[in-house]
Length: 127
Image 1 (tube, rainbow, N blue to C red):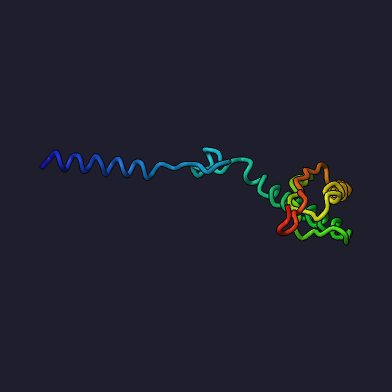
Image 2 (image 1 turned 45 degrees about the vertical axis):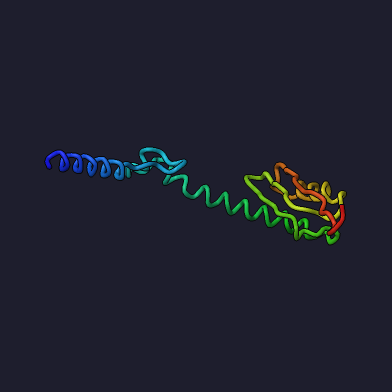
């Protein structure tokens, strides 16, 4: 009887120990996971928010620049902006538009580089 109680107590202690172990989140320092805020968290909190706003504004500017060219169907083009670097994904209707859209994006103020992943849309039922 005592051996059963001892093993149950050992198992309960093991479960309690395992469940109380705290793991830090990715990108979080050990001091922040232990309840002590890191020194950079209070200062760096505003930087990601303003960076995201700037990225969204740049993305809208690139969309607006592409939209000024009526011959380009921008409905199948997605624009991702990160710190001035723009990535273009999606499809266009004509092969000449692939480079044209990239050049339009490069001309937007604030764009530092353009990664062009655009492809030509294949017609339905065609090869």
